[in-house]
Image (cartoon, rainbow, N blue to C red; front, side, top):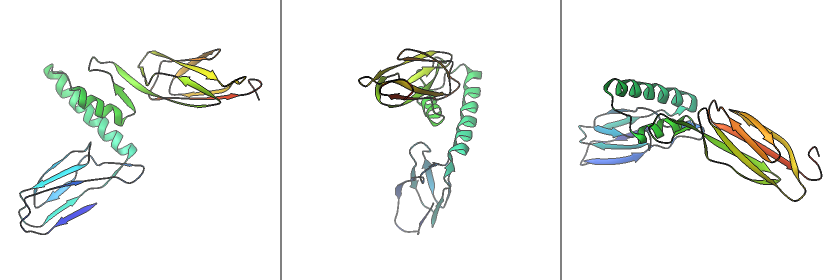
Length: 187
């Protein structure tokens, strides 16, 4: 993306970057000819005090590259703050963690990963998150005479006991796919 403003009476302008599908906002942008503030979470660029023609250049990042950049930034912040005994803000942790598919419940050191459930032939109840090293329960209610036919879990270990799927020891974000079919478990 490139924004060009010709020198004139402009004192301040705000623009919002919107990445293409499958891309993420850049961690940083380049601005020539103006003071600026850029929020890499919202994509808002505030330009002020132009000294001439203003040019803003921003390149969207792949999800993988942005995740690496967020991990690097998160590691830098944790290292900096841990040396001074100051805890990282909850907002900063949530932002970094959400970009990685994980969530921080509070800054007590507990890392929680998101749980995504897809289901066919049933309803279910499940928590939104699972703590690292923890356990979560997905309760399945098959329609009518339906029974659980297949269960696929990624990102964690699991066990099935009747209509309850227990997910444990997540390694990252967890997905659970449940299919229930009528008339028997293998139809």
